[in-house]
Image (cartoon, rainbow, N blue to C red):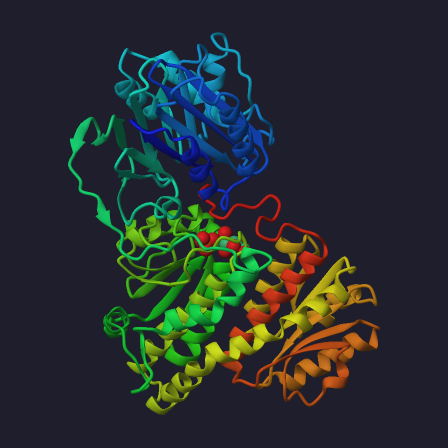
Length: 612
Ligand code: F6R
């Protein structure tokens, strides 16, 4: 699904090849492949199943073996890391794919929905070696080749249905690379020694802060050290854009994984989220985007997202109702797409996405925009598609997230949603004194999270104690609901252990039947108005010999009901959302580590889901 390409004219790019490949490793990793073509039309094709590092070792080995035998001035290369959609994780399904005569090589990000019909139409002419949709496009290019690769790709693209970005090399003309995009992201940058192309902003942002982001249906023709962009056969003049704030790929330092490091970064991420948006001295929300938005005639908020981002919006929904008195509907993006959209002009449609590229979120936004409704993006990756499509936006300022499971960004999103709700509230009925109290509390939030992080050894011990269980219940009430859903998701995705989030209220309407000594229950029970009712629910579980792990506040008065507990700093119910989430991330992480899971790259998952 994801690829990066670099085109180099005068440089020996051997060491860069491997370096650039590693920049993509954090995203997709089922398999990876590359092809380099140099002046004499020699090709260097390598593929490997597994991590990018497996490909990198193969490339290293090959380079070492052939050292000094040739000059290795590559004209061009395309590389790809694959997250399997069509066909299993095998070397033959790994990109680049090639045409019948092996003249055209292609890498592709996306899905070609009509590939079966296309495959059938070419069946008598070509033998297929893979199960992929991409190979069909390679064959189609050869079949339709009219002597000019650019016009051929234009014609081929008219035959393709659905989202893709693809890049093609013609071995007969290695001085050219042509790429085209529809929906899937694609960016291009002219560096000192050549032109670089990537489907991942974070990867290229390691090299530059300014690049050209291709629009849908645009084609880029890279030739020697320059590139030209075309739209519907016409040349388009476009300068590279300063993307401004770019995250740098982080170092692991002494942490056992990027996921752990990213959880420990949460205090400083929250400082980023508040910086320039809260005036702590005057105790006011101070941000132009939010102020303009809060003045608008908005009667309802509709928040759309998927996965962990969708749990952040869920918390946001409570904030909007509670602090702004604005009705807030929250919808999973894929369900939004499946449903009938009835546009409401006075509704603000908020889209949450870490990557800014998630296909269902992006497609939902297109539907909303097409009906002339106002969109607002909360996105982490600067320059991403969703950020660019939004009428207005705020960045979540979480920095690059290397761990596939989102952690620090979810908390950053919750922070941004809280500021938005307070800003709306300030223009409506929220008392100034209440805003001031919340801001006073928020000033201490990074320190409170730090306190949670200091509990890591205790949390690790408990994770290890619970690591032999095959199932977990995660119970919640009210604002803790999304926290429980998110905690449960993290347990599933990091440790591959079954976990179910359930309302503590709902338990006795059916799921209580599952409770047994072998089915422990995790409970989020901070102090607040639901505290005592949750204690009653815990007693019901205890009466069935269920074990209880409580995420509770330090001053909890019923500690005896829990089998074990993780004591969190005393905070208001509002801030306990942040502290509980952080603690739950540590619990899921250490549970997974105890089970020897690869926490940064959980099986079957991709960091950025660019296909529906
Ligand atoms: C889970 C996780 C995913 C993402 C989801 C949306 O830990 O990371 O559930 O939250 O794929 O991704 P974004 O936020 O990039 O739209």
